[in-house]
Amino acid sequence: TGTPSFYVWHPEGWSQRALTEQIRSALRIATQRAYLRPNAVAALSGKNSGDNSGVDFPTVHFHEWQQDEVKVGLMLKGGGSENCGCQFSIPSPELAAGRDIQGVRKAVLTAAHKAQGFGCAPGTLGVGIGGDRMTSFEESKLQLLRRLDDSNPDDELAALEREMYEKLNGLEIGPMGFGGRTTLLGVKIGTRHRLPACFFVSVTYMCWAYRRRRLVVRDDDYSID
Image (cartoon, rainbow, N blue to C red):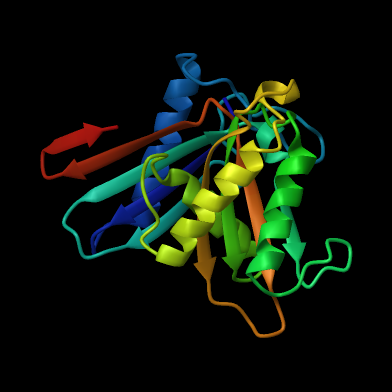
């Protein structure tokens, strides 16, 4: 269930067009076999395509790298949690937030508090700091491909992740908003360079189900986790 988003890292020489068609074909087959619920509807009419295909559906993000293997990450993100995502442009008089780390803290706290249990808590937050309006959200979703038990390679961001995890669970919103000490399962934060005139903080909420998989293909071998 949810919007299928694919993240593909591939060596030089691979056809992105062919990879996209293979992904679309696999998605149609999975839908036909009832592994996936048909979720793609036309933006205005709401008509369901019936096979999880449509205009830029699924979304496929490509990255070329120097490794001699192909890595495909898949995230299935439900509508309830997606509706809880939000973006802040700081400074923000509404949040009393400036363009500093304290302003980022206020933005993330506000996002989690607004979500309450509507995102199918306990969830996981992906946070993108910087970039433009689009790439800031893109970074926040990319963070959700990380393992829950990993550690951010940036020491400052690692400390911020731990701090926000403790503070947000301290809100005691709890599972599905009914109260309790487990409001979030994790907080993952990434940054991108930005224009001097812009400072965006984007927060993507992932539900407790956290549906995602990773496929790695190298020569005739592959692994899935």
